[in-house]
Length: 311
Image 1 (spheres, rainbow, N blue to C red):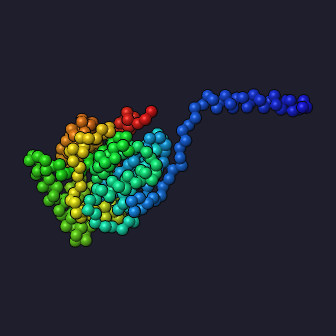
Image 2 (tube, rainbow, N blue to C red):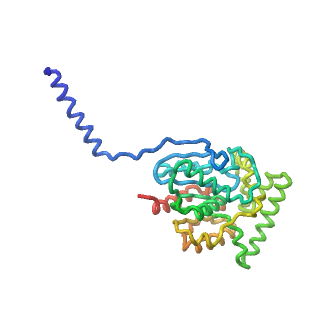
Image 3 (spheres, one colour):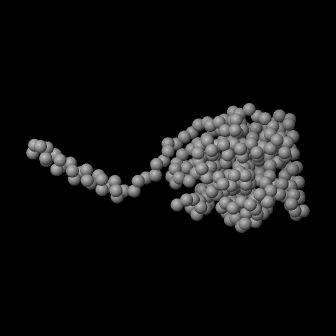
């Protein structure tokens, strides 16, 4: 070996040792799979989804006549610590699935969620649901509790529970007369956009007036979602007190300060059935708290997840 070679080796060796020491001292970062957005076939329909991040999986489930984009700020906010999936349910924009009247609208949605979680290999998941999406999440957990780590739910519309007590029978009648019956009549008359306005006006008066034109267009393109619920032969979807009392996964209930009083009644009863689940009230928000006060809702979810995600 020449002197020149010896000098090259003596120069390179310290640098190589430094790199090895640096690799030992700097903790390895968790591998984050590339972000995905596209369509996947589940339960015979095409479902549009967005998936990104690494860690425990969180699935976001939207309410009636909404779409996966309402969760964009949540996906961005949680994907640094979690594997986050949002999706548009079978009859919501930008999906184009053929409509058929279901026997039980909730059954189809629960099956879609099951096969979506399986298709993307998410394992046990945290599920965040708002409104009808929260009702889907509750039903899913009741049927597939082994697949659920926790639930974070914004006002599931379990309105048939209002029949349980004479004190809330009037609220049930109000729902029938101002939302369910007139909206169903409008759907049968072919006035689906008006049906959406009628139903949403009961949930949160004036909500449609707050939507930008592109958001309003996306809602109208999702009218089959509400139509499936209204025309389902099994009636308006619900869950049983017995099924709720059997749930053992951690549950956070989120309410809007300005929501109709019936949702407070439902949330309080649900908390009892779930063995004392905590309720967080979002100041200044109505039933659509997820989009009205997203930062406050994200904070409530993040604090709850920090207690129940794997370390």
